Image (cartoon, rainbow, N blue to C red):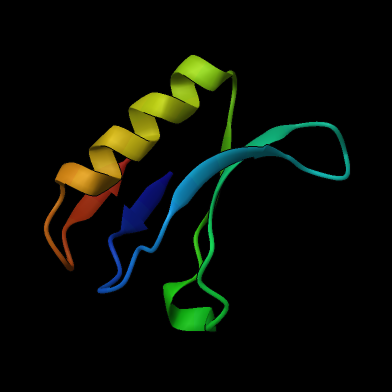
Length: 63
């Protein structure tokens, strides 16, 4: 999956979606900065959060 880091990331957390799968979600409500990325486990989700926080604005990430 390709992902371009937005300017505002807010607070990232791992939550369970309605279907029962896990996803990395931020608390931003505006659509250009909203992040929802599916993850396999909490460890995978923590790796995604770490990669997003370390990336610079506009950087392309692959998950």
